[in-house]
Image (cartoon, rainbow, N blue to C red; front, side, top):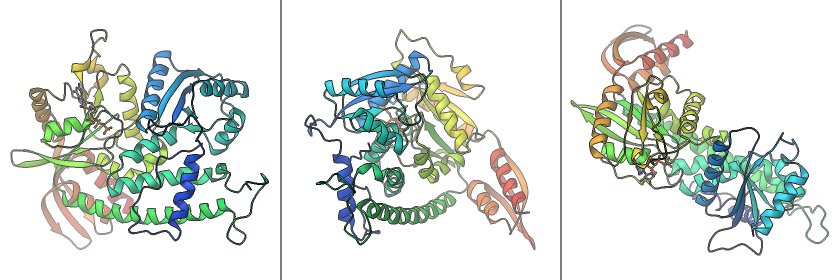
Length: 458
Ligand code: GTP
């Protein structure tokens, strides 16, 4: 069961749909399928949340349940019950066995839930089959995360990214809407257009909207690249890490910025940058979208351009909530995502934040081991003296591996040339017949990337 908390998110000033009202009505219809008499419009819909897993340690399972419950609340619903469900193996048709699904649905209904939320990724057919067996609307992890992103998408860029992911998720689930059922006979109904069913009509509209969104996204990406090129010679530090770990709070403290930092997941969906200066040289500090365990691949893909910022940074400040008992899970999730987006070679600095929240019951984590040889600091983002030390350390680390190189870049490798101008401090240029010889200052990683781009062209 898919449930989106709002109509499609873009104000359609650039991309009017031929029949926009109809599309909205259909998405609305989708949302309304979960309605039951228990629904309370004031407090949000009542959900029963299940963390499904096969073989993870109990403490991790508890942390995962807490996380999904928190996400459900952040997307605006009430949680009336939750449980951890250990399954031996996943049933390919329904994920859960029939008896288990019916027993859980019974408990959920008894608790007053209108919907069952499963902390699992379900295929469209698994969702349909499970709904048939359990007799209650089902919502999976991806829909919940999309909803939370949807709530926080403010800028045009973020809204385009999230709507794209939302519609891509919706597209293969159109059949589950039951739009083609005839209300009177319970059989298939032919639709309004000649030969076109209601679900075919919706599919066509979604496809045309997706195509338009992709066009807009490409346009934005081009302008984003131009912006990054404009900030060429600056070293760049990107704050990355688990959602709610304190990246924006640190950004505010480090750069004297006033960005919204709140105790809720995915507060920041846009990359915001501020300059830090030392000895007349600027270093750009960027706050990036937070990560989460099992971040849906399509969201990751749609945020690729935002994540460019991370790939091209001189230094990644990996922020970890030190007071989280599962901080190693946070660390591993972040590192895994950095690997996925190809940013695992960028130098790192670990920032163990929120040390003021570590309780007596918690043992101090072995920061050194967690940083795995990279430099690190453990601090509270509200402690200005500690933040000031961190600022100095980051500025030093961001330049730590800079060196001077002389590179010949042929004109046939325009991407290499663009990267050199974008990411390096150019000291000298000498034009030759087939290219340009550059003396430049940059990090080892950047120099290697330029050389790779040159090699690929030869
Ligand atoms: P996303 O935008 O969701 O990725 O979150 P974020 O990583 O940017 O976290 P944010 O800065 O929004 O902080 C989340 C919450 O943690 C806010 O309520 C902050 O006030 C709080 N917080 C941040 N750093 C600290 C800290 O060192 N100590 C304490 N006690 N709270 C902190």
